[in-house]
Image (cartoon, rainbow, N blue to C red; front, side):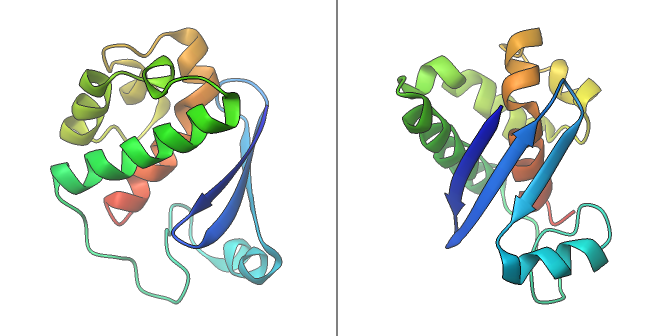
Length: 127
């Protein structure tokens, strides 16, 4: 699966092969930084952003859901319902196991969207 997203002015390409084998490829300017940055370091420019509130994280996840749904030509609720996004924003899972425990996340959605949503959650938490 290959997904291209435009998030906060950056184009991000997510390529997934299986449930946890994911590689995020950013534009050329960010690629050299991504190689040098510690795992989970979310923002370019050196300092990690301050964590966001649950409401702000919900909005970030809703934006990601809209972008994924638009790319697939489906309504946003097909990706995840609001209840699942609220639970993600509340529990902030940090790994595949935690993400799979969210209501509405089955095997297919875990494999299809898990990496993208975990990345958004980690970025929102400043991880």
